[in-house]
Image (cartoon, rainbow, N blue to C red):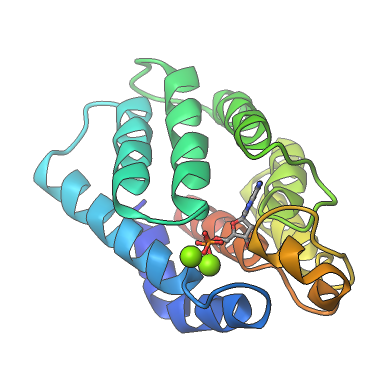
Length: 188
Ligand code: ADP
Ligand code: MG
Ligand code: MG
């Protein structure tokens, strides 16, 4: 989470630029506010387990990020954390099971699926590729995000643009790729 906060700080401007093309130009600042609050909370109250850390992070995103991405990323982290339970250590397979449950919860909350030009286009292939390790997951997330460029958005603000959403990378897919890039960086 600390590394995600750092990466989001570095890339906030880029995420907001992406959102200015097909949204309302706040995705970078939304996530920066959210993950700054997450970093502060985790430093102040270090959680006992990975699951507790993710659940606290998810709650914080929900309460600090206005906009679609707050509840969606909040749900991703909360559900992932809940699935990890109170294990003190988790291995790759447990993390993958947790993230799979988290990604499914995002699709349920958003009424969305891969192909709709949302964060799920990066999250879903990343979790699948996590079976081959963190680097593969990050690679798959980046590919998934880039593959949103030719898609027409079916969910979220970008869907209001209809065909004019074509030709732009989805900001949420781009931030999801950053999340997995941070995870790969920490794992390395
Ligand atoms: P807002 O659109 O409210 O300003 P953000 O700009 O922070 O919120 O986040 C926008 C991103 O949220 C989109 O790029 C997309 O990836 C994601 N998103 C929006 N709606 C949905 C949905 N129904 N399902 C999944 N992801 C969504
Ligand atoms: Mg926005
Ligand atoms: Mg907004």
